[in-house]
Image 1 (spheres, rainbow, N blue to C red):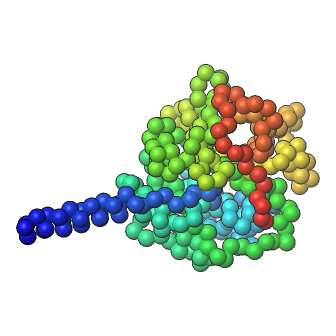
Image 2 (spheres, one colour):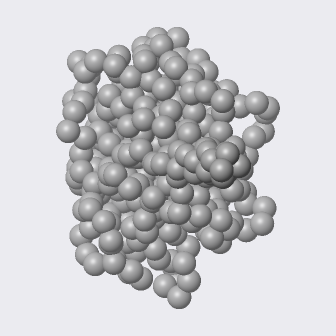
Image 3 (tube, helix red, strand yellow):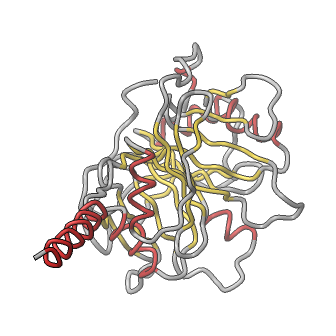
Length: 309
């Protein structure tokens, strides 16, 4: 009798442990948090992100490695110095916003992803951690703190208030789908290509918001600096690229002579591309499509301007 009691006790312990493992659920992932880029000349990049685009610089003076340019109180581009000269890949990481960084860290760890032992707590109260996707790209997750930058007096100078997607080169779609779709709950938002007989671009929308990550497929085995700069990109949203062009020209920007910078993408949305001083493409895109997209329909809600500064 005692033997059976002991066996029952052991099964209860094992069952409880398995139940705890299975009970680790994924907290909400609500959108793009930030994109960190390598910059060779940060003061030169300051001219682009702060003066041309109009994003709030933090700290406001003395631009150096770690400077941030805020599109709104939660989203920003961070610039850091590259680890070595001549670095072709200018993307350090893409980070997403989550409601609970610690729970997400535990969730990913319980599902076989190598995670840090603890989350990092920043001076603004934000909590974050970084993992690597199946191809080795750094992916961050950030829980906003209680001390986000206050609304700046220059908020109206921003040409965009919402970073609605980021993209990077992907080789193995199935492996990335397991990470983003199966583990993190992202879903296919749109996919297409040029020509339309192949798939060059795959948009995976966050499970609890409207932002997305874009797989940039079919790059050559050894992409050039320009090809990487185009693939590894970020996309601020705008209501009108025509209005955007007028604002940029008023600040001294000039399009290429004889070329209309406004382009209709195969996804049915108007866009206007800029490149920062290090060649990273900043793809301004209208929030709403102006025509039906090629190749596949949209499967999720369209983004919109940030409701806050």
